[in-house]
Amino acid sequence: MRPVWLFLQDLVEDLDAARHRDPAARSRLEVALGYPGVHAVWVYRLTHRMWQRPGLRLAARLLSQAARAATGIEIHPGAHLGRRLFIDHGMGVVIGETAVVGDDVVLFHGSTLGGKSMRRGKRHPTLGDRVVVGAGAKILGPVWVGDGAQIGANAVVIRDVPAEATAVGVPAVVRTRPTTAPAAEMVDDPAIYI
Ligand SMILES: CC(C)(COP(=O)(O)OP(=O)(O)OC[C@H]1O[C@@H](n2cnc3c(N)ncnc32)[C@H](O)[C@@H]1OP(=O)(O)O)[C@@H](O)C(=O)NCCC(=O)NCCS
Image (tube, rainbow, N blue to C red; front, top):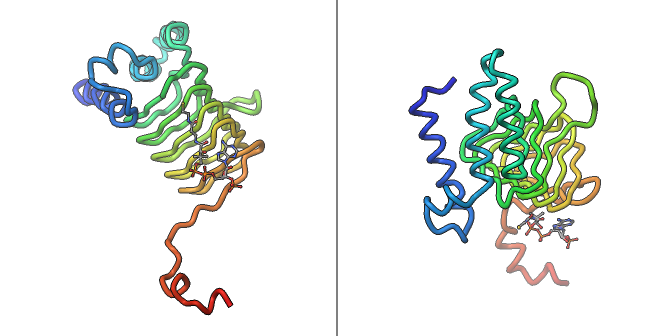
């Protein structure tokens, strides 16, 4: 478990993550008072610490549900969320018990990191660092989404998504993203137009 001073540092990082990713955010105070996504992550950071102690698990679940009632965002205390997670707008976000989320991830409203089966064990997705999940997107089952991937709004992801890829549609398919600019000789050589 992270020491208390690092825990407090995480909370400040969450504030700054929202400020840096939302052009509409003007100050830490505005974010601290008016961003339900930040409130939900803060409560999660507390309930996740409680979850480490079996005797506090019921209290963690109840607190988590109270946060859901206040913010519209449901984060299971057992999920593993990285640093600087930003949940934008927030309403309708669901993060399941065995989900794992890397650092610097953005989730838009209505996104779900959910399960596909009722069996116990790992049943929710694993997201790498810097993943962006568009509004209304569902990522279902113990799939893996690589670092820097983007999930389109309203996509339904049921298979792994490679790092830096963009996945859109239902079911989601990966749209290849050019990783390098075309070679200069390909652009300048008139022979390519013959
Ligand atoms: C997926 C996304 C990241 C792609 O952005 P991009 O890299 O700029 O890609 P483009 O807009 O050039 O689209 C690439 C292709 O994917 C398609 N596409 C983009 N987003 C899509 C979506 N959500 N669903 C289905 N197809 C989509 C485009 O039509 C395009 O298809 P084409 O190549 O056949 O023309 C972006 O469109 C998206 O959905 N972002 C989520 C943003 C969001 O939820 N905002 C909420 C703010 S409140």
